[in-house]
Length: 402
Figure (cartoon, rainbow, N blue to C red):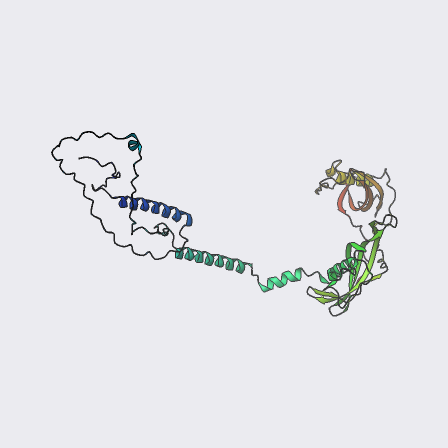
């Protein structure tokens, strides 16, 4: 059997059949479609909406083409004489054979849709999202319920945070000094009625500290509060036109405060008054202080104790009474201590006495600070010891009775 030179190569089928050209095209197109579906499945993870797949038309199995049977060779005839072929005819190109492929009705012109068993349905994704949102909502509700407090506890905390009329007066006076015609909003909610600040430059004064000294009740829920303010004022140099802050000393203001339970209101602008008169001096247990006497054993004990307590120099345990304990200041704030004056409430022959001492303490940087102490001294076995220490001076016992 002779082989036709124009026959296309074929791939044998596992069943032993030889597919046609159209069968090869179907096979290759099916492979390309499966590869595209696989990649689209992994890239989109099933989020593309899927439509119902139309049923494929029944596939007809075309009968296998019959092999061409060459007829039997006839009896050999007499060979004709060889014909002489011209050179031009021999070189003339032969027309190419054009193969026409018939269209396959089973192949679609549209791109394939995602139809893979690995794709996640859209309904499943929406259900998972709804479950997640419900879980987050429940956690948020639990957190908000945990933050709720008892109304009684809230009222107690509010009462604890109430600054009172004195705290409000300190805030109001500090805000008033810094306000001006350009900063009316700073006083909103703090003072009753309109405020006229025309011609008052903003920031002319500034309060460094404000302390309420007294609150005198004038009526129900109404007080007159005295506030001491350490303030500075802005000064402009006429030559350089540069502004700077200048210390203005301590000023005293009285302001009317009305309200209760954390809700207060100033009834008007604060009024500056003169410095209040000081209170009567109490009777001190030590009448007067004098220059330290080096020959007095009590003075020597006071000097040694204060030096060890403030500078850490010397043994502090040697100066305190037996059975008591004390420790120096940590960290040590001073490098040197000088006893300037000292006085006693009893003569040297007394077993116990109160000493009032004034010392000049020098810091490691060279600054000097004056301090005062009241010490309780006791004599044991002929030696003086420190039995008590206080920064407040001791007073005489009161002889009056209520």
